[in-house]
Image 1 (cartoon, helix red, strand yellow):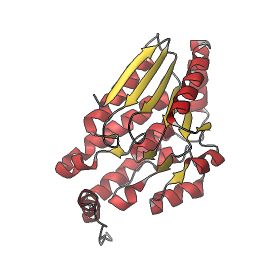
Image 2 (spheres, helix red, strand yellow; image 1 turned 90 degrees about the horizontal axis):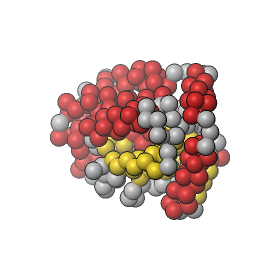
Image 3 (spheres, one colour; image 1 turned 90 degrees about the vertical axis):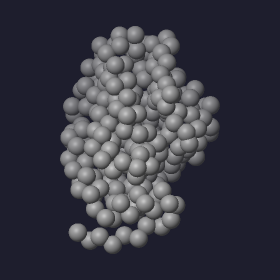
Length: 253
């Protein structure tokens, strides 16, 4: 399975396991959203940890799926939006424990989470612009300052975990995945000792006092994603990615 879930002592651990880079297809994004929604109403669960196996946390959507079936774009967008929203509105705190790369849709998971921990070698980015695509800015804005967000989206260049920690985007940095997983579990165990009602209301309060509605902002952002997806440049970006070459963008409309 690409997403595995276990519950022990009130803590649910969701592990992304979709080799080689944890890029999820449309059905896997939807399944992840449903999984988190179910955990949100599970009285046995007090905290959720999202982590991953392999070289990195998550490389986003499966570009090869879209290349083989371009009509999947609506299902992909829907699954990504539902996953990000499920994390954001979940009654239970969600902790993301990141290592390696956090790219594309991986930013949605992390940006929607309540607490983010990372290994020192991790990096965060939205390479979509190099692939003729868009998306993730709403959640990137929950992590980084305005100028950093714009540079990341307009250049496709990532930010290191060290820089992210300096911005206050990450709660703590860890030398390796073993120490990362241990730290994430310690945070989850601490949360699990609190009043479930107090935690639920605290998260609702924190969501309500945010300056903007990240779920609606992301839904609006996806209209531009779909517009770009229909262009020749978007197709060229996907072709170049699959063929492992530089893209030749020409479409100005």
